[in-house]
Length: 170
Image 1 (tube, rainbow, N blue to C red):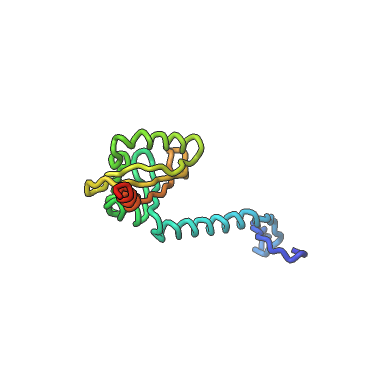
Image 2 (image 1 turned 90 degrees about the vertical axis):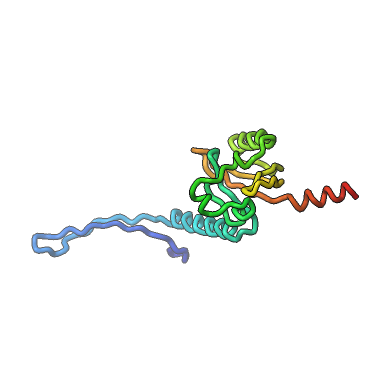
């Protein structure tokens, strides 16, 4: 452009030929698609940042639905004792992993996800694959609505709970 700004242009055209296969005329249209291209680039950057966070395994991250865990990073799988193959086979059910006394709080969290699109962090326990009950802090945000799907983080509170118990004893 005259002001030096670059623009993305998408062009479509057609050439019409005479009886001797010589180009006679051309008709076409040019469209400015800069906004779409900028949006696509922003989406690529956002997806890259998100993937870097999940794949870094700094914090356990999980994508869940009512019927179970749909995706998880290695940090989450290691923490709960399941393998990637078990996850891919649909074998991780967060409801079955949740002790009965924590299910009501989970249902309240699901209602918050539906109403406000996120669930503030709350404490609960999971029963790990090896049978141990472990306290966790969980929080989530909605990433899909039909069906309801959420992205959550999970923090193991075992060390904190152990330290609190020791302080109470002292």
